[in-house]
Image (cartoon, rainbow, N blue to C red; front, side):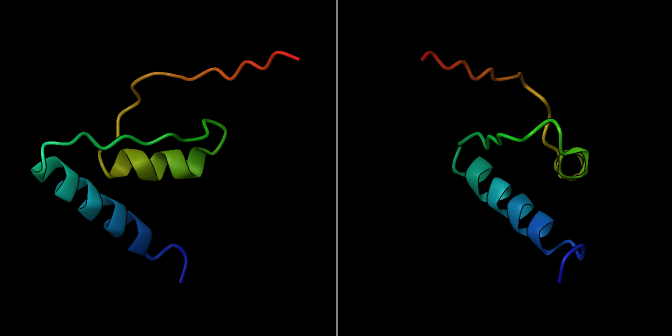
Length: 57
């Protein structure tokens, strides 16, 4: 059932519900996965910044 748009439709609808409740949908994505990042752009997500993970040992 992959690549038929079901997940994109669900995420898009969830975002509409959140926006109707005056909430801001936020998505954390792996920049290395260009396929999923393109899907997110197609459903109107915009890059807002980058997060850096720093670990101290």
